[in-house]
Amino acid sequence: MCWQVWGVAPTQEQAGGGLYKDPSHMLLQNIWFTGIKLVSYTIEDTITLMRHLLLSLCVLLCSYTEGQTPLPLLEEFDSFDGPGEWTSPGGNTGSDNGMLCYNLSGSYLGNVWYAFESPIYDFSSYSQVDLFWRQDINLRPGDQFRLYYYDLMDNSWYYFALEGLGSGFQFATIPNTANQVTFDLITTGSGSRNGKYAHIEFLDMSSPTVLPVELLYFEGGLFDKGVNLKWVTASESNSSHFLVYRSIDGYDWELINQTPGAGNSTEEITYQIQDLTIVPNSSYYKLVQVDYDGKSEEFEPINLFRAVSGHSSIRLTTDLLGRTVGNDYKGLVIEYYIDGTSRKVMRF
Image 1: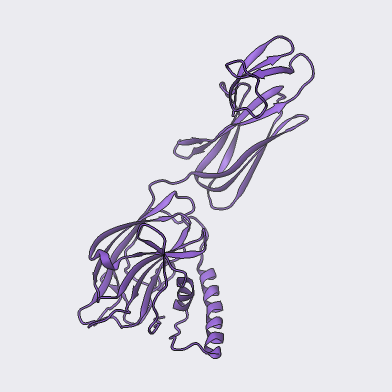
Image 2: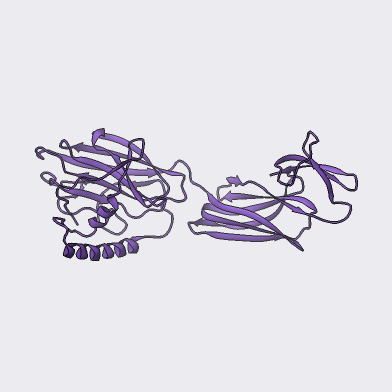
């Protein structure tokens, strides 16, 4: 699975903060799977390349495992190319006493793009992913060493240039939309390769925050017997249950429902309940998610309004300064009813 690109200079775009976007890397990443040595681009080469790319796509899809990747995760590089393991470029590369190594013996080859590829990850339930590793490198002038990640947000490869950092511990942060990481050595430099090398001792992946629930929306609708309430989550982590509260003023809340959560999920899930209590005029509902460890997250309440006939209908609504406000006003208001009563309510 080792392949070579002779005389090819990698393309790049500055993405800010030492991070680069590489438009060419998707094509090259596909070629890593094929083992093709590119010397010239003929029609026959192109047809062969496309056949290999289709095969590579099948391999990639079949290697995907559903489910959230647990963090923290320590990659110690004791072996490669097995189920769930990183993939090596082959040849003279592999594991050297638990290190990711580009030259197990002698020197690495010249004019080669080496790539060690991670498995496919799912970081969607985390706020971000922090990477920590130790590298030991001694490269020629012009050789490039990179940490790549693939971002599902825009289907693009990004990389950090590592060759200028030297040996030692290094840090980087990637988004939770990344699903693959690679370490690449591009040996297009000049000079003798004797005594030159590159090793990665380990890669530690962690996240400062696990997002318990990614809520897409929480909404309510009136019907003749009460209120339909609906919420949808894009992902859940450690999610025990949901609590639904009702209020008539936005201050005092009453628990009206407890619904089990999905535990851990990366699929979109829809929840629906009914509140069969008729509340005239303004009513408020809020959703609270509770983890298995007792921690909770409260989401922004929603406001519903049921117009009714009779003495409880609203005559006028003002702010605290007595100015008339409309139904779209947010904040503390005073509702005046046709029976002469009034109350303060909070609109969200």
